Image (cartoon, rainbow, N blue to C red; front, side):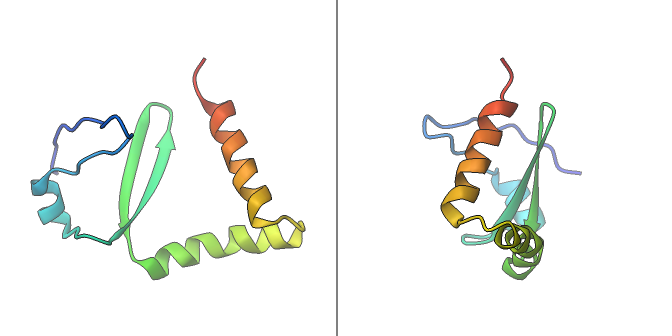
Length: 86
């Protein structure tokens, strides 16, 4: 297991330390899935194909519900705001 410390930039960006990138073979342009649970963030390297497979059922359900991409974006934005600690 690799452990490292990093900071968040003023733009909300994080740097994945080089040792972690090397170990996981993460390179420029790779796709990472980010999961937030309680006070933890989990990043998982996924192929673009895997990410598409994960997203497909979500977009299919949105289409069944008659939601536009803009409406889905608004729902996600609202969920982010409502899930923030107060």
